[in-house]
Structure formats: C-alpha cells, structure tokens
Length: 345
Image (cartoon, rainbow, N blue to C red; front, side):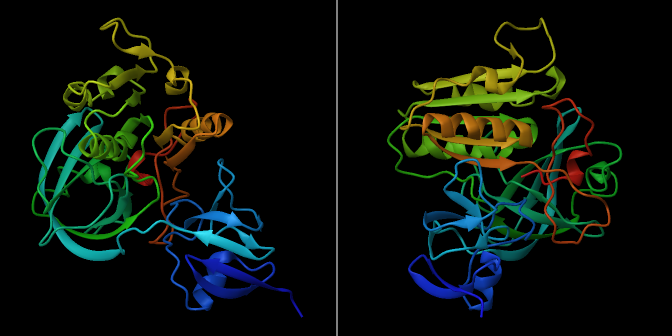
C-alpha cells in the first residue's frame, strides 16, 4: 500500500499518495487549486509551502512551489493568496497602435468589467488564431476604463498571431478572453520598498504593478528598472515620465546595445543596476527567464520576497491550445522564437 500524506491547503484538508503530483491529488479530491497550463510555465498553480517537503516544482525562493510539478513526499501545509476566479468573456479589438517598430498596443473592449489584479495575465484567442497569453496593463496615457483592456504585443514577421495585427486582425476582430492567471501581482499593505524589474514587453505587467503600488501609497519608495534590447524598442518613456513625478520613485532605464543618444539611458543588463536588497524589500520581475531567475536569486540571497513572471519560449506551433508560452528573446543573446509564439504576459 502506498503511503498516504495529509495535505492542508488554505485550511482545507485532503489526502494524497506519496509520489502523487500535488495538483492531481487536490483535483482528484475535489479541492479547487488554481491552475492553467499544467506544465510548470504559467505560474497559476504557485502555492506557498508552509510546512512539509515536496519533490521538484520549487522556485528560486525555496518556499514557493508549482503544484503541477511538485510531488507529495510528506504531510504538507500550503497557502495561496486569494485572487479573482478565472472566467471567460468575448471581446473585440477597438484600437491598434504602434508603440515601437516591433511592439503593437492592442486595446480590447468587453461587455462588462474584467476583474484581475495588477500584474496578472489573460489568455487571448483572436478568432481564427491560436491562443496566446498577455497581460492587461495600465494605459500609457490617460485614465483607465473598466471595460477596456490594454496589451503590449511584440510584432515579428514570423509570428502566428503578432504578424496578423493590423492586417488579418483589425479593429472589430472578435477575441475570446479567459483569466486572470499568474502570481506576480501587486500585494498591497507592504510597508517597505518595492523594487520592480522589467525587460521588453514584460513592462506591461510591471507597469500595472508600479501603478498599483503608487496608487495605494503615493509617498512609497519604489525602484523601477526597465530594459529593452534596442533603443528603438524602448517605448515606455512617456509612462516613465508620469511615474517620475512621484517623490520617492527611482527609475533606471536600460538598453543592452551601446548608444549615445542620452546619458540617462544605462547600458548593459538590468541586474547590473539592482540596488542592494534587504529582507524588507518586495521584488517583482517580468521578462526573459534568465533575467527573472537572476533577479530571484539575488533577492533570495538578500532575504527579500520576489515574485517572478518569466516569459518562457513556446515549444512549437503544434502545442496544445491551453499551453502557455512566453517571450524569451534578448537577455542572454541566444536565438529565440517570436514573442507572440510565447507567453507575453
């Protein structure tokens, strides 16, 4: 007989066989544990390990696990923060604007407000195209509208979805939206400093987190490091100018290529400009996996809690419809797939 382990999740108890996948054990017991891709990519099933041990599925922080990848090997106590329940809705494209030569801003209109936390992402399926995941973000200009969702999508010629933006996908195009998903969302009531690191269109979820943090407490200490591979892809300047008006905000723009346009723009990698972290800091990061992993390790070494949103590459066009994919791209200089073939939340 296999050993049975007692698992307590948010105060609800179930039993799983030793060696079972945690998520499978919960679902077979009728316990609703948040999940989406079931492949350890999207982060929707992340839970905090309070007590006990698992095999596999841990992240860089050590106390957070992916339930779809972690196997039960002892009694466990787990917690997950409350988030809006995932739902589905039909939307339509109401605006397409070029933010940079390789980035398109897409605005969707929904029949009713869509509940999500700043930093979470959604799964979008433009009619006639495969599903992809992107993060709704705060408008770069103007005030938000609770029936409009704004997305930043990198447009590359070979992208199955992004290459159609403005041609086959135009204003009026129908879109099925589902979500929200993801764990790298703004946590209110943090009294210490917040440090945010974003690369490429990872700026979208991190811009939402930054706005949420400043809206909650305009006087808070906040460091925002924003990076792009090329100067022409740095589309965030207008938004950063808005944020720079707040007194205790430090903004560090980084471009990996050498440039002489402005001394304000740093050269190199975003991790080169991380401030010294402490246990009182709260860190958020989104973008290339090498970057988010590096930030998470630095945060863990300093004892700071870190929430990551890695943009993991898509395994191919024949993926299952529910598989999450994200952009990798620029950070380590290696060849990558197109951003819209990736989870770009």
